[in-house]
Image (cartoon, rainbow, N blue to C red; front, side, top):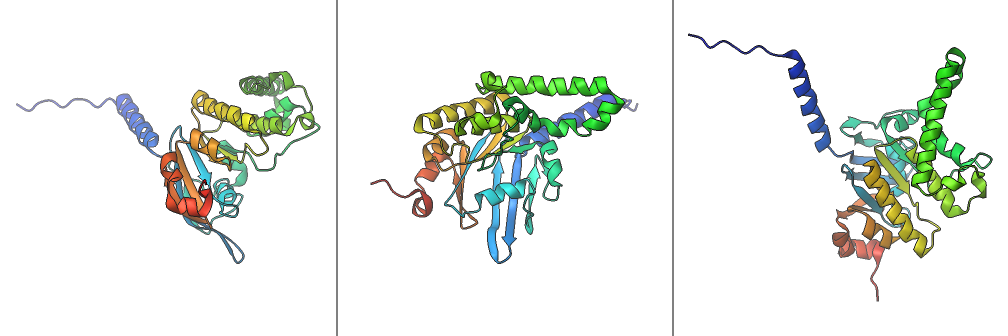
Length: 281
């Protein structure tokens, strides 16, 4: 007698499929760049570089000036278009995305030179980080003024929470251009966090900080990573900060990959010492 077949439960099959997909995505790097090359006229800024950032990792990107570090961040955020190679965010190719769509995909960044809207308050500057959530606000305000007001209130409340998290709540009403440079850098990170990114790109965020401020800043970034379950790619010249904060470090030199590994491996890598770190006497 033939054994009767079990009926397929469509809902359970769908749930199992979703679970498998989540597992596959969880095993992928948050950022995976392969063979990326960027040329500006006769200058080869990046030459076949590859780099990945795992889920919840803080990865450092170091190298001499002119190594291509900022160009690489620009390639991730589509400000510079690679001539070759691919860049993926959690398995999704983003190399050809529109610049305006990058923040909505889950990538936020800071820049070497702080971008401050000086006449706006600190809170208003941070709220601008969530502008992609408020697109078409004018039209929506006309059609649904109550809904638009509620949306802005939510963004304001989230921005206030971020400033509190970064120890800047008391400065929320201050003019942004009245802040000293280190606090402007911190405000820029707060603005990036308002976008609720999965990947945070930090371009020399500790520049201009004193030794004590650098140590405090490192603790802040580590807390942000854990509290928000973020992946972070950090360009920084403060080697003490990079070595103590990063899980892995990638090294660029003359637009190419030079080395990649854990801090203790990079610290003793002869090629990295010769090209960048130097030897302590």
